[in-house]
Image (cartoon, rainbow, N blue to C red):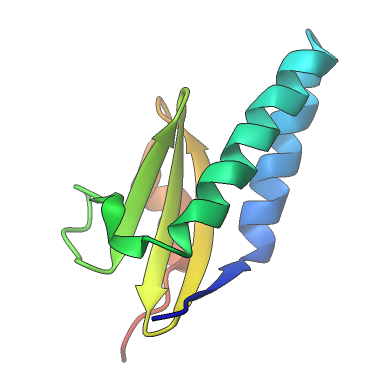
Length: 105
């Protein structure tokens, strides 16, 4: 099944913020981290359920891939996969992500 990968505006802001923060010390490393995040995200479209379920939610369709110190959180909704957030592993996930998740209500 072909899946369509979509980035939420907040996830785009997350990746831009990460790049800016890392670039303060190393533009090379910032580019490397962003490239790795984008590569992993692209692979999600082919294998959406390879990421683990996000423990805080326990929802089969809300999953994550770990990239360096970051959690790439995404939601599978039929053929659409939405990258919800890129969060540093030390940040609390729920307050940062709750409002971004599409609810079936």
